[in-house]
Each structure stands twice: as structure tokens, then as C-alpha cells.
Image 1 (cartoon, one colour):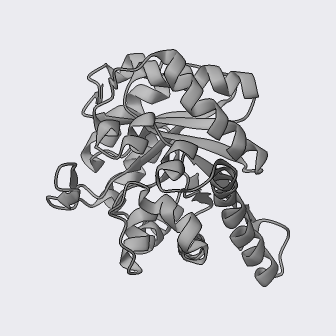
Image 2 (spheres, rainbow, N blue to C red; image 1 turned 90 degrees about the horizontal axis):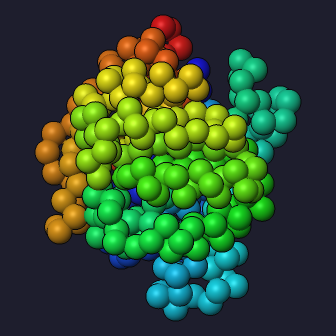
Amino acid sequence: MEILDGGMSNALEDRGHDLSDALWSARLLKDAPEEIAAVHRAYYEAGATFATTASYQASVDGFAKAGVSRAEAERLITSSVTIARQVRDELADAERGDDEVVPGGRRRFVAASVGPYGAVLADGSEYRGRYGVSKAFLRDFHRPRMELLVAAGPDLLAIKTIPDIDEAEVLIEILDEIAFPAWLSYSAAGTLTRAGQPLEAAFAVDSNNLVAIGINCCAPEDVQQAVELAARNGKPVVAYSNSGEGWDAGGRRWTGNTSDATSLAPAWAAAGAHYIGGCCRVGPTDIHALAQTLSTT
């Protein structure tokens, strides 16, 4: 069982940062990288074995719109991996243990976050899919930043919050070409992708480079059935839900009530989830509770 971290953006907001612009948490790769490092450290210390980099919404085009040169944008994207690796290594040194090992003999890992094209649009499209662009366009968008992230040396890619099968197929093709390990998780509602496709069909995509397939950025109550469907793929399952609140793209705010994902997580593990953590609005305290709960099941 591996414990993933929680949301980067909410943890940064809790530290006093305004993330209302289109770059979202990726802006702090430029303006305050030490704050991103502090969030990674908090999640590792809470019990996470994986840090997910602050590259979910990072792209060369997105940085260019903010006045950043291409060379600097590429450096910022790769720095997301460097920051997480440095925190991991600093913690290992401080613990005087073996390289990358947490107390108890478990290793720490860095997962380079690859969000959907819709995340860069900053209009809630990652919750809808169907962008109205071609597969060739998506390929041209995704491949350069995936190559940048891989070159920075993460342990794997976290291809996450993918809203439809078409985009997943493009990402799988690129993954096979660059031959690098990754997990793939869909943004879903009930037993459908956000684009309205059956999750059973979505989980049928496959690659020798996929270490896990599953779901993220969803309500905790939607995870159990999705894990059961994903487990039919035969691979380990990844599952990390939101707090239970919903995203209002127009108002750019979270609404609704939270759910207790921690109490549900043991059943996810029993159904086949091997990588379990949190997504939006899930913080270090929540991940600590999750880690404690799963360590006793």
C-alpha cells in the first residue's frame, strides 16, 4: 500500500497564497518555490510516500501568456520535479537512513503531475472534456511537457484528472513512445468519465508502462465502484478523491460539504486500490489520518 499526498493548491492557499490567476499553483514555481517545497515536506511528514509535483497546470503556453520566455517556462516545469526530489533527499539525510527511505523501511517517491489539456484552459474543462480539438493537437500539447518532466528524473508520471477516453488514448500513445512508468487516473462522476463515457471502457486502455489505473478528483462516495471496475484491468488501482466539495468554475470556488474519505479508504484497499491519497481540498492533516487508518488495516 502506498500513501499519496493531498492537494497542492489548497495547501498553498492555507499558507496564505492567492491562486486565483490562470497559472494556479504553477505560478509559485516562479514566485515562491520554497512554499511548494514546504507543502511537499508537510505531506511527506504526514505519512505520504509519494509527492506529486506542482506541474498539473504548468505548460509553456500558459507561462508565455504570463510573460515568461520559453526557456524559462521549460526550466520552471522541470523545477517542479527538482523541488520535490530535493525535499525527499533532505528528509532522508535528516533521518540518517538509507537514501529515500522513511522510518520503517519504506521508500519515498516523486510523481510528476501531468494534468489534462482542460486544466490549462482554467475554465473547468477538466470536469467536462470534449475540448473540440483534434488528437493531433492534444499530442502536440502533451508530449513536450511530458518529455521535460521525464528528463528531470521523477520516479513516475502521475497522469491525472483525465476527463475522457480520447485524451487518455493520446497520453498512452506518448507514454509508450517515451517508455516511462506512469499511473493514469480519470476525473469521474458515478461510473462515468466527466465526458459521460463508461468507466469500464475507460479502464480498458492499457500499456506496459502503466503501473496503475484508477480515479481522482471525484467525490469520495464515487470511489468504491470505480475501484472495483478498475481492478478488472488486472493492474494495481490508484484512488484519490476530493474532500467531497464541488468546484464552481464560474465563481472559481469550492461549494458544498465535505465527506469522510478516511473511513471509506479501507474498503477501497480491499477492492484493489494500492495507491491511495487525496486530491482537491485534502490537506496534510487528512493524509496523516489516512496513513494512520490504512496502517492498521
